[in-house]
Length: 262
Ligand code: NDP
Image (cartoon, rainbow, N blue to C red; front, side):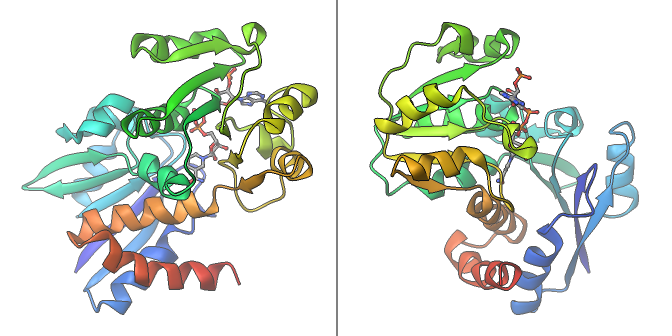
């Protein structure tokens, strides 16, 4: 039997086991997907091999830390410097980043020409690269300037929130963790001006109402939360685990997603 796991801390609330096990069951694949509460990254490689895992998903706070245990990275994971999926191949660990694709699937049909990312953490990096790959002009702003160094190094236009002059963007992305505490990532008036000229607002958070998207709705623009990003990154991860086409997995995992959300 093949065995997979999601590693994180905390991990109890992860929906990944349900999504992945649903696919294994539907396809009659002899595999199980479990949760692993990883307290420290120190022994990750030993844990992975001793438990006989075939693959894993990696969530907060280990997406950057566990890169050093991979023998190889796919090109996007290497650029972004963050992984959320690992597969064992010929006794080597290969790291992938499926968050980027998970995000992009939400907006690929929205005809977006330019975007503003608020936040400069791991997910902002993944999103910035996938937007660039798809020829969407991208600006990044962040509260503290230190985290912008990465973006400057990779020739993204990036500013600290204090130096930001409002411009027009089709898409405004909240890639900060502000919504967890029900805070806005920028001053309300600044956001209203941004939303006024935008087509779409996206907040990575999911599972509860957030002020950012509520404000976007009041400004009459379309708003999307992070729930489908979670689904799409899981479909991509499953298609890597099972070496099957995205669309075949998608059809099944969408059903599991509906069960979770009913
Ligand atoms: P990081 O911890 O790497 O980065 C957090 C960022 O948020 C930093 O830029 C930080 O700024 C900024 N920030 C935090 N609080 C505030 C605030 N109150 N106001 C303004 N800026 C703030 O997090 P990640 O990039 O990994 O994740 C960000 C969010 O995205 C999380 O809520 C996470 O749960 C969610 N996420 C959702 C996914 C999905 O599938 N839907 C996938 C991945 C992430 P500073 O540098 O100044 O501290």
